[in-house]
Each structure stands twice: as C-alpha cells, then as structure tokens.
Length: 107
Image 1 (cartoon, one colour):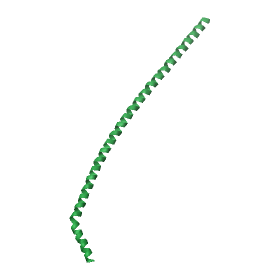
Image 2: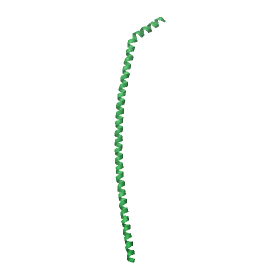
Image 3: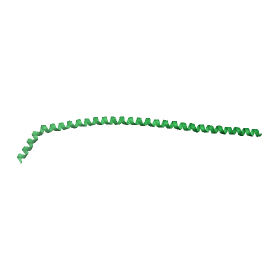
Image 4: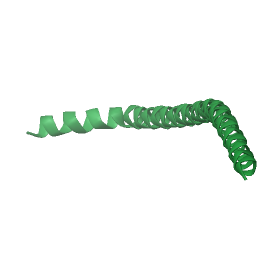
C-alpha cells in the first residue's frame, strides 16, 4: 500500500512538474505573440501614416492647382472688365468734357 501511495505521489509530482513546464511555455508563447502583435501594430501604424500623408499631399496639390486656376480666371475677368471700363471712359471722355464745359459756361 505504501508503494502505491508513493507511486501516486510521484505521479502527481511529475504531473505538477509537467503543468509548471507547460505554464512556462505558455508564458513564453504569450510574450512572443505580444511582441509579434506589437511589431505588426507599429508597422500598420507607420503604413497608415504614410498613406494619410500621401493622401493629404495629393489633396493639397489638387487644391493648390484648383485655386491657382480659379485665381487666373478671376484675374483675367478683372483685367477684361478694367479694359472694358477704360474703353468706355475713353469713348465718352470728349463728350463728358464737352458737357462739363457747357455746364460751367451756362452758370
């Protein structure tokens, strides 16, 4: 009977050692998985930053191009209107002077 008890105790002791060994292996695996996951997270974060930066640069470039085009159009429209106004002034200048002189002489 004593041998059976000793055998059971030895078996339990070995089982406990095996469980401890498995627990240590699991802890190491958990650390390894956490490390791999963190590296993957860092890599994805960097890729996301690069993509966001690229997209932002593209949007800024498109906006700048659009703004420059609009600015040129506004400038051309302004120059056209100034030329039109100057032409009207030039075409009516003599008449305006004659009217002013006539009005002054009548007073």
